[in-house]
Length: 180
Image (cartoon, rainbow, N blue to C red; front, side):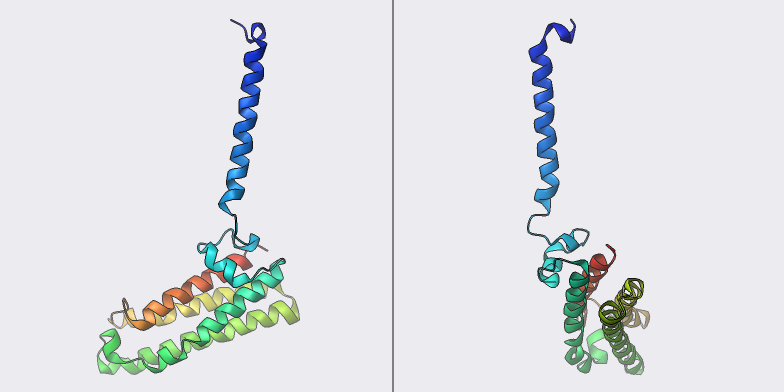
């Protein structure tokens, strides 16, 4: 049997294929409904969309994401002030070294986020902006690394729980910035 003998079957097949393609194309767009265009590669899309605050340009999206991450990072100060050897199950001898490393890590992250804004807004250097964001993200992991390397317990401490949130913010910043 040749298909030319059954023209209605050929038309039906073409129509069905067109419908399938239309639904497939719409599925990808539906997956991102309500997600800002600069957050589509983010691991935390809903949070990212809140961070970029309706930005329509990538430069604005990066600025909003970095500013939000900077604000959250600055709020870590009180948690750093309350660090103690008991919180991480550390011997007293290592407490000062870990607290110092944590302060330095969050301080460096703050400085790098401020630099990222400077390079984005005043210098208009997207590559240095991206580098500063990436460096800030790396800085944020320094405290957790210090605690675990000294044999301490990082999980389920107030600082660890707050840091998990900051890690998500930093990840979103990087996702927005890498779409250059």
